[in-house]
Length: 383
Image (tube, rainbow, N blue to C red; front, side):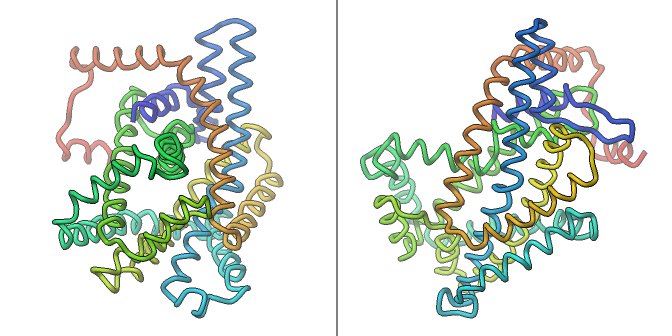
């Protein structure tokens, strides 16, 4: 949460406004400008440019081949599961390829700008699906309420004993950090690209908004998912545990789907819709992140933009046909390097964020910033 707070505050402070009214932000900008400002020397300027350039490269790399592959892979896995698995209608060798092509076409229509309404519809449906998902978790946990304390105990003992994933405490912590970073993107520098477009006089206000995201996403929703899986104790979950200990490919969304099915037999179909909506919205978002990184590295060019979009859609197809383990290995490697370069910059720029916090608190005390009622905020927004 603190990491997300710092990077999104910096994203707003060092964003760049273009003549056409658009805004660009993210690690490419706050690392280059912020470090040069804080360390006004040739070394500082060069370090900022180096970190910014590396961050842009890996955001572009992950945007092209990571932010889309995992989503496509798990969407097909869930769709295949609800239609009968390997013996079902999507069990053939070419089913994943056909699905990937169709999904790539849907995503392509949005990122090429052909039907922007799909993006608008998705932005409205995804919050609704998130609410349905959380409600389903609560139903499963309520039905199995006596088992929840034991489930919490199993999670804790699994993390801090030799039964942990890949060999005990260290292995469990490593996998936990990997999945958490993949889940909430804190420290990667990707979220500030989107947060930089906010309207505010005080960058720290967007940092306060952003720090809630890891809490809701990872602490609340992921914990509810974990408890749901453990209390359901399905054969899928037991097989997933055995596979993890044996170092085999990890289980994906099918484990979660089977847990819901123990109480809500119809919910896997709803989950399929939710996974598809989450996947499409995430792919569109990473398409935007990669686009910003591409623009930073290569400038604004219609040709290079179209090439990027075609390659992005191509990797949607590739992600559909690869195994989950291969996709995660690639994603983890890129995210590690991205976080490494970004977090170095965050530590160097931490005093800048401290100044922003002090300035905002002073504005609150002086009355320059006041809390408004919801009706007042809506009136200002309409204006």
